[in-house]
Length: 191
Image (tube, rainbow, N blue to C red; front, side):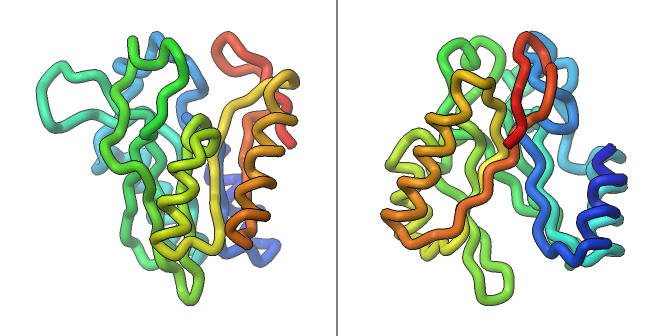
């Protein structure tokens, strides 16, 4: 599915594609450890090759193996597959209540990458709801804030409003990619 969406986005002239939180596995907290992938996994390698071929910077969401210690809980991660073959990794810093039973928080409160003349701040779901995350991205020069999320009908308005507040406060463009449909115990609503 990711490869198909990448082809469609590139065919429409996109240079940046943001997938939702945990897009490669779906939001299945109890399965995070079993589904966690290393950065050199064949799945990421295939997607990276497509990103290069399509000249499409692509952010995918997945649980990432913690290489720091054996048996450690995985990170909820986002990997930016650059059009030039590089990879930027971000670990979700602000976990939702209960996620800490299955994942560990990242250690960097904000992640920004420079693409051409634009600095992009990456966020995963709850990160965008913590003003300090957006503030740190702005302090690092972000002009676009790109968030992969999972939210339902009861949360999408609040999440959208928070991203709008960031846009106004920092003069940013914002991008939100949400699941559309059922994933794990949730039914997400896209938008």
